[in-house]
Image (cartoon, rainbow, N blue to C red; front, top):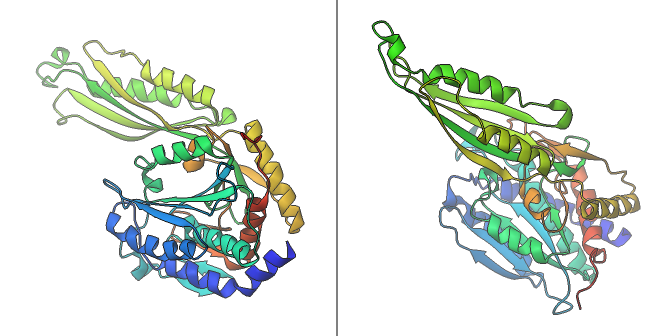
Length: 385
């Protein structure tokens, strides 16, 4: 542990420089061509450590980076280091929100979510390599470019890896300035309700119409009634549309709904309630689509075992780690369906998706050390050999 910390302290400047280099490459999800430069920075770092690196092309995304460390045992266990290189910030953000390093803080678009986490991962692996410490559980790195838009292209790769992995270490940023690890995440759902009624003149023949907007008002009240803060259930009607004009009985309306749940069972129950909505207005029909796209990351026995492992590693570093629930989803929600998962192992800071986004530089060394110790831990699952 002392050797790992010592190496990381000695190489702190290089880790800061690498974080800055990543942050200076603007890489929004919606501009796939920007991601090649990020991968071009990361790939040589991994290849220098003996990783076999493969770049996977994307159909509508910037693709993904997949890398496997030299395996000590041909059929030994694997552990996934999972992250993303895309951000929510459009190209040109650096003009008004430059990357700035002041004292123990670095600010800039994407530094917290999650380029500093990628840097911590690289330097944790470099520390182990430099010290001749080879994990018994082979590290596999997967970095996608579509996490911020739902990982629709990369999810099947992530599922395939998680099915055969001993554990998944998610380099998403920690939770808040206190650096809490994310041991639970809400599942995220998206639903669309389209209502079709019948148009009529609002003055001459109002009785001849069927108002889709009137029905939408009933639907919205039913949806908001599904909220249950005590159970961590939130149902939000975030977008509505409808109508042709003030003097026309509305023939159409629609609503887009965001759903967050803490458990698979609540996700099933809320989904059934939404999909089972029936119209109250005569002459109106409902078309309801959607579902829970990212299932909850729950505190399963396997996830608790990995959390306990992290707490023990933290104590070796004089860190008393804390845990909490995150309201948003990540690729950890997916890996948790198949293997032990611990999220929030990335940077400590604040301001994900916000203009004050920053990381604490002085926390990067200790979090990279924590990751290195987790990488050295033995397998959680019994050997299949």
